[in-house]
Length: 136
Image: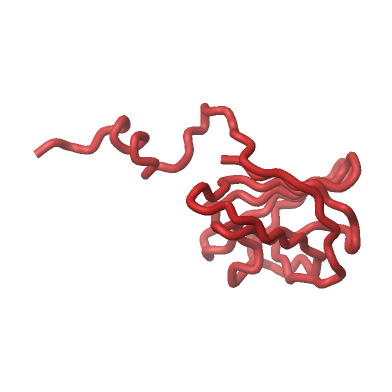
C-alpha cells in the first residue's frame, strides 16, 4: 500500500496553503461599514480587547474561498484575517495594524469569518470607506 508523502499532501491541499507560493488576488472592492460592534479578544490569552466595529462583505466566492482577507482604511490602518489559523481555544486570528502599533486579536463564536459567501473582519473606524482584498 503506498504511503502519503509531501507531494501527495501538497497535491490535495491537505497540509494548508504553500507558504512559498505567491498570493493570488481573487476579489476586491470598497464598502462603507456601519456602526455595529463586535467583541474582540487578545489572541495570545483570550482576555477581552473590547468592542470594535467590523466590515461585513457579502461576496459569492463559491468554491474558491479566500485564505486571507485584508481590509484597509486610509494609509495607516490594516486588518488581516487568515482562514484556518486559530489559537488553542479555537478562536480565529486577526492581525490588526493601526499606525505604528500592531495587535493580534481573536474572535469567538465565528464572529469573524471567511466562507464561500463572504467575510466579516474587525476594523477600527465606524462608517468609513474600506478597501478590501481577498487572496488564495
